[in-house]
Picture 1 (cartoon, rainbow, N blue to C red):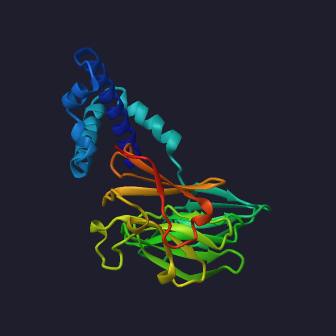
Picture 2: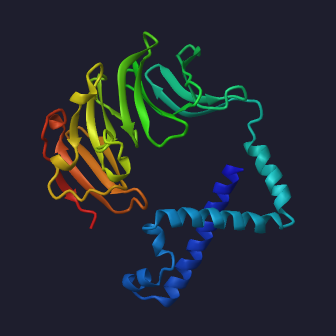
Length: 291
């Protein structure tokens, strides 16, 4: 039902945007007039209103479609193509070295459990979260020996990063709390990784804080984690509480991107020599401004 709603929402939005685009081309001359005319411009700034509007339009669309003569036959065929039945649902597949990692759900276990299958096809259950907890993201190291994953309680948006040793089948003592957006990236040494955490997580005031990027070394105290991207590392940092921050690595450079979590179209890009990532008080250079 949820998947059907999502499909209908996408179809409705595509049709709406086509209508708006066609009328705009006929009635408007320049970008300034288009922005002023656009009756849906509020979607870029009012997140809660946009969310509620999408839900209401989805419900309205479904009611209209259900009245059509052809809807029942199409819905039946759609279910035939997407119904998993009693078969396991396997998704979020990642291959690292000789191992294949994935989430699997079954009728008996209708929640995410993390499995690994080796090159001989042997399947092993790695993480089976306790009752009341769920895992949604996992990141195997490049050598496949460690798996970092985020786990949260009762569907909370705030999670904890844990690290599992694939060879010993045990957890490391590492527990990184206050995570609002995992987006984890392993370093090449396979013994450290970069992760995102709100700067006010200790004060339990995450909604008022901003996202920063940290470097964590396995088996080390999280209090010693290095902040590599945040207010103290940037000059004139246009930090926003609703921003998304990501990190990517090339041969010579580390690139950090900061964008609005709602639209994602306005972004700042920063660069830093890659060898400086493990240093304190690094200084990033902005190469693209969101303005």
